[in-house]
Every structure is written in C-alpha cells, then in structure tokens.
Length: 359
Ligand code: ATP
Image (cartoon, rainbow, N blue to C red; front, side):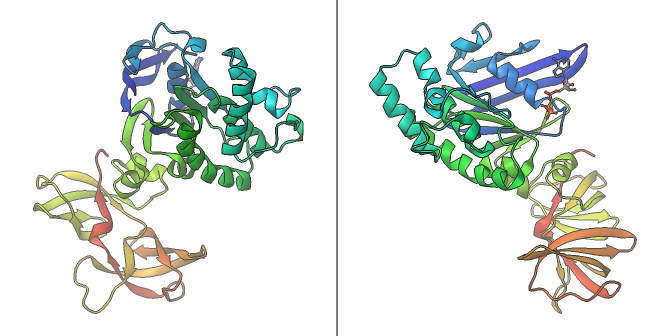
C-alpha cells in the first residue's frame, strides 16, 4: 500500500502542491487527473523519487521512501515518449530490467514471453523497435516496465503521443492489462499503479480511483462512477464536461429533498443531508436531467425554447433556452423534438440535479 501524507512542493516560492494526502490500496490504480499545470507530474515525480517534496511523507508498505534513491525503489515507469532503446529489438528492450536483476536465462525467456503475451505482442521478440507503430511501442514499454513485477508502476501520459484511434484502443486494453498483470508477473494482489493524465475519458476508462487536482490541491477523490454521479465542486463538474451550473439558494430542506431557488426558478432536488435555509449552493443540472414533460409531471416543469440539436449516434445533444439561460442535455435519439425556435415544456429530473460545494 502507498500512502502519501501532506505532500508540499514549491518552485521558486510558487506553491505547486499544497498538502496532498492519499492512501492507495495494494493492487489499486490511481489516476491523477487535472488541467495542465495543476501539479500532477510533480506529484508523480515525487513518488518516483525524481523530485523531493518540501514537506510531507511517502510510505510504501510502511517503508519511508524519502531517503530511498530512484533505482532502489523497485518501481516501473512508462512515459509518453516510450524511452525504448531504438537499436535493440523487442526482446532486448523487455528483458532489460531482468538482466539488471541478474535473472537466469531461462526465467528471463519465460517472463518476456509472458509479458509480451499480456500486452498483445506475443511473437514480436525479434522485431525492430523502429518497425513498430506508436501503440505497439507503448505496449513494449509497458511490457518492459511490468516484467520485473514492480512494487509500483508509474505512468505519465502514456497515451499522449498516440493518435486518437490508437489512444482509444490502447485505453480500453490498458485497464485489462493492468488488471491481469499482477497474476502474470507474480503479484497476486495486483499491480499498484499511479497514472497521470489530463484526459477525463482516459481517466474514467482506466482508473479504480481518480484524484482530481486543481492548482496543487485535491478537489475530489473517488471512483469514476462516484465522480460522474456526484461531482463535488463546480471545477470537477466543468472538468468532466458538465456545464449546466448555476448559483442556488436553499429555500427548504428535509432529509430527502431540498427546494432551491435558482435562475431557472425554484427547483426540487433530491438530497441526503439537511441544508440551512438561505445558504448559497452551486447547482449542477446534469446532462441527463432534461426531458419533455408528460401530463402528470408536476415538479421542476418549465417552459423552454428549442435552440439546437447535435446528433451523436445513440444520443443527441439538445440545447434549449429557459428565459435567457442556455442549457445542454443528452437525450436519446429516439426522442422526437420540435425544430429550433419552437416552444417545449421541459422537466428537470430531481435525481439528476446535484448540490455542489464551493462557489
Ligand atoms: P502538464 O499536464 O502540463 O504536465 P502538470 O499538471 O503535470 O501539467 P506539473 O508539470 O506538475 O503540472 O507543473 C506544475 C507547475 O510547476 C507548473 O506551473 C510548472 O511550470 C511548474 N514546474 C514544474 N517543474 C518545475 C521546475 N523543475 N522548476 C520550476 N517550475 C516547475
């Protein structure tokens, strides 16, 4: 298990990490997600031992890592730029860490075959690195990092240099590879990994837990589902692509439901805690909240005007106007909507409205 406590770091008196604490369970993978400059690479480099924290503590299985140099940490690395040996073949690249650890020839042969199979490159041993696609090179880099059964695997934007199609394929494979890798290399608890990306789709596809960083502080930590269903703050909601965020004020609060005044009118919101009357709360109207009203709808019904439809296959992105406010929703393509400028009666599902923290 990896524990970091109150990690702080400044460059030239500018704070880049402002007290980051998290406990990563053995076999779990944590994705550090945030916009450019939020400090995720710095945090990864501190965990790696390539950078020292100004304050805070880093423990792996109870061992304080502060004084342990990079090469003695027993970690595996995968970076955006592959960092493979271009003049060696696939086998010699993958076997590199095992040679350093003086494995026997037979054990090395078996392990290389196992990890190449794991990453979908069985039989590629003799291939030259420069003959491989970017995606294949990154699979080799992953096989090389996994071969010695690292105590911790660190990945920094590993898909960053790939084109979109390759990215999407490897993204889906990566989670499965990370899940299977522990069994293949002899870590039955699974491979513990920390993964840096600024791409939320990538984070969602790969992560057990996502840690969202904003200007060197933790904004939220949770599973992809938790983050998507209950983003804690406007920053997280916006970063996940949800834009219907409005100021709200608590009018009435019970154990199960809250009435909130908003620029869209008074809205009923499902909630599980009591809020003080008059308190200001940001309100997120989720993309799935909007639908056309039916005759028996009574809550959160409002008059709106159709603005735009954007077809996305199974669903459509629907832009409507309520007063002078634009709202975007995702609705099934099967839902028939009137053309632009026509009035509609809209309902906002109270289960799909979130009360957020902060401002
Ligand atoms: P990106 O996705 O762009 O790499 P990031 O979230 O990984 O962003 P970091 O690379 O951790 O961000 O950088 C955080 C801040 O610290 C940035 O403002 C960066 O310019 C600064 N920074 C990082 N390394 C150094 C350094 N060695 N010296 C001075 N400033 C640095």
